[in-house]
Image (cartoon, rainbow, N blue to C red; front, side, top):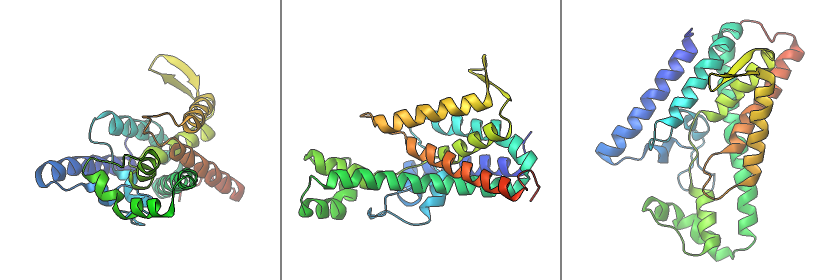
Length: 242
């Protein structure tokens, strides 16, 4: 019911969540600045963030970490019992990192589109001073510069990319298993994954104002998970314990 990797991931995510709250409220230290995933042009970017961001969660509410950890346990415990702890951990980290990479690529596409309508001086100003401005709760009055600043200097946090990778793996490994949506509506796992994936594609391309969910990161976790599972399947050791 609670295999070792799942147990330790739940503990680590919980500790980081509490640490973020304590450091922020007691010492005014923004842990997300150092461990959340930033775009490479941001002054706060660090390559280690491709790993650490998946252990950070939004502390303005409990729902973010609650649903991620529930889904991690719900779908992940079966996978870890089938694959073994080493393979499960590798899968979790690879899909999480892959989700971060996809998030950066999508940000680059959007940034390139915004930069096309700005002067070089404006872009340089955002790169140089944008982080400080957002940290003080402000942004540029120019719409283009403001959008560019948000794209470059807004961080991504959460285990959702890796969790969506786990969801994809569950759907591929146990396609006919029944999932009860809202604990009441029975849906086969393969259809649940397809529906959820389609929703993420739609929401990602809709890019609605005020939607701060990293939909393409979720899809990135699923994409990396799909190719990793197909690789293991091709090798003929998908169900081996290693």
